[in-house]
Amino acid sequence: DAGITQSPRHKVTETGTPVTLRCHQTENHRYMYWYRQDPGHGLRLIHYSYGVKDTDKGEVSDGYSVSRSKTEDFLLTLESATSSQTSVYFCAISAEVTGERGNAEAFFGQGTRLTVV
Amino acid sequence: DQQVKQNSPSLSVQEGRISILNCDYTNSMFDYFLWYKKYPAEGPTFLISISSIKDKNEDGRFTVFLNKSAKHLSLHIVPSQPGDSAVYFCAASSFGDYKLSFGAGTTVTVRA
Image 1 (tube, each protein chain N blue to C red):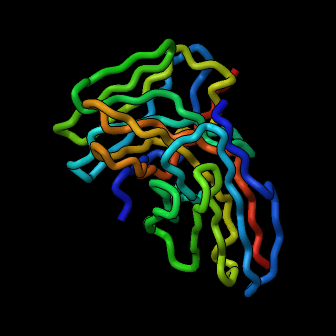
Image 2: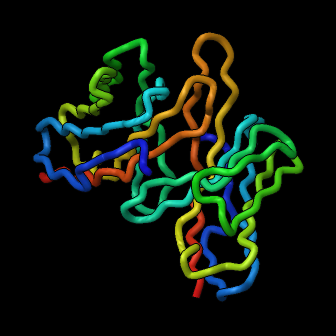
């Protein structure tokens, strides 16, 4: 199994409070991602990182920010949590691939179930 | 707008029979396709992939077929086993773009 640890695994928070989710990897992979999983939507990309301090927005980035100060850590912050951000959040990592194949599979963490009340 | 679509939310199949999961995509730039399997309370796990230079890839009981002209791929599981009961996600990416776009998933139930 890929070395990916998400913390916390479960969290309940109140509307309007900031929340930070942590993703830690031991694989030294370049790329890291945050997805959210919701019924009927599958997995949707929130933000991703292609290196230390290099991040970009995904398709559902509003209300979220990220930081990556070290290769192994990728933090997701909900600046002011809302009930619509109740979801399961997954961190994923992938390695850089050289050569003619320009893609690599992503490996996922166990997920963080976040409930905003 | 979702670029990867799995139009069947669920599939029920008898143990030992074939499971066929379908996936359609709209982005013609996609050239790498993956299937993930997910059990409850766990993260998705990579199952099998195929690049656009192929039309078939096999790994044990799992075979993925790609029809580029129809922008369609399918996953065949033969024979289906009870442990195959899970949610299956189809995903796609473009060359050099490591971000994956996912479908909504298909829940497979294998009946004894």
